[in-house]
Length: 410
Image 1 (cartoon, rainbow, N blue to C red):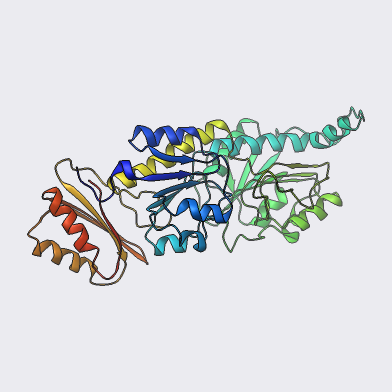
Image 2 (image 1 turned 30 degrees about the horizontal axis):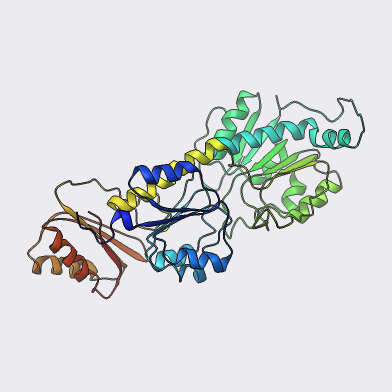
């Protein structure tokens, strides 16, 4: 069957050691032109590699800036094989009509387990005892060593990760309180606090699970740290911009906080060859991990399958469910029709122009889907016609002035 972009010609570029499950998922769906890099690429090499790619998959190190995207003339979709999408210029991809997909839930369990493990280690004072043993010091004592049972866990950001941490923490006998900017239904015996300050007053362990936005930048600074009670511990496995690291270092130096665990940082090395620099380096009461909250083999395998399937579904039938920058439609398939997609700037009159072209061509429309956001309009049309006429119509749709791209899917 003729399409404007045959599946065998679609080139896929996967970066940063994305799980082999993604490669296998693409291949099982009939995509064979796959380039798989184990690392991120320097910008100059990335520009060169992305120039002919139709689908790009990446994790958190690769930066798809406007400069890079301007070289991606063939690009139809981007897959972020992780939770975050801040490494992609979403404004530019939207302007170019390129949907961006991610995996917001596949590594939830991995992050939750790490946070609880760190809470146990910090409350027991294990980081300090570990470093003392490495120095040949034997301090066998129960002083400053506590169980999690009957302690209070304060969760800031009660989303998918926060709720799962709360459920697991309750199974260990913890009391769970949470604070969120939106009203959330508590799970188990968790309780919402009236304010962030109330949470900080009572929590023995504070864990952060908020997105990176202008309002969350350094939302946890000297004032919030001072509001935590003496001897509490702080865990950040959300975003590096959320915590004022310098203020945290001061509180750890002066003993106000018992300890901290930090997995994300304001500035992170872009490769294994770059040094890691932080004011928290060298502090015995701090657990430092290199942004691995969701980096378990199980999570990466699940993410590989999830994001690859989203990209395949978009490429095969046009569905855009869960795209972070694009009008979302879930599309059924009609075996005996041809499907054409049309992405355009969202201005009045485009749909009328599309239907006028269909009417002049005497083409019977079986179904038509339209979804818009502030910037984009996305139309998917199923038509009852032959292959050549479908391709002719696709080319005619491309002449509409506000068109960003059009394509015959099948």
